[in-house]
Image (cartoon, rainbow, N blue to C red; front, side, top):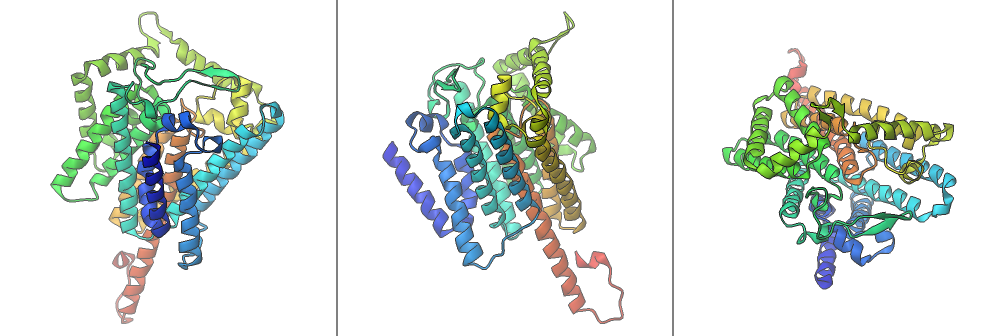
Length: 461
């Protein structure tokens, strides 16, 4: 087994070094199928750094050397570059601030958190420098969605055979002296599945977001067979999402689909997804029972009482604000120190931004959101139908992410972080490519302009 993994790693590294652009397409299946349990049990690299991290670092080096230094592609200091760089800086400042409060824990946990964000930076730097045109963007968009479908397959497999899916499940361990329960060979929380996504809520976030992106991809192609195949992929994602039994995921997808069905341009597709969800809900009794049990746990109509889970979340949110001091609100405290001080994570992105990442987190979030919306508008203005659809899909996905973040700390969880930074890269490159095409078309019109006819903006798109 180890020998096969070594060969696999060597082959992927060779592909990355020879063709970095192909490496950015292959990275998503690797990230979404990484066997955390198997790797963690063996502990091959320091700080349990996985081969997925190794691939991201090598991918960055290959892109920087082969494309930036040797290929003549300038460093793209645009919106997405500053988003990922600002995110890395935000996490680093907050982590070091937290370390000064709880230095007895040691530097290693804080350093690992910063290094993980460094790996993220390497990954998305490489992706933004390997999406050069519409073709690259379409493949990148499709590979992310396809990888999510493969990940959904692992989620479904874990649901039906949890003991056989042990490579993707975590062993028993302890963190900061607190024992954490492992998931190998056990039915966790009534068989809540998450596959390689580490957590059922994180899995639900990625699956729901990928479903929205796949729906956006349906309009890219005119083939009826391809559309049918895409709908089948959507069904797989939907089934896996229901198997996570994540209320955050249900809310994220359900509310987004309802709004798309009433206010979106192509309203038939979200109605089809809603109908498919009802069908899956009716046909799978086990999923239906678990879903009703978790939803009814929020509010009991008979006693007219809110569940302890909801009350507990509210208390956690209050506690994060009550335990934060001026230093925390300015510099942040990082995820680790926040958990030490409050004995749990914040369970809300909107709580985490001011109380975990401080002023830097708030500034980063507001600036990133404004830049994102501006680029969606610009992309649509430039008039490219394909890129406009990508922008629409990214905007709906960001909206769904904002719903998910209300009850989950999406800004501090690795897989939701992947999604958020990926959306920033997609919209940045979509806008840049659309603008280049718009200007090129305008120059082509001017080359044939005789000076007598009037030039209109519509003639350039």
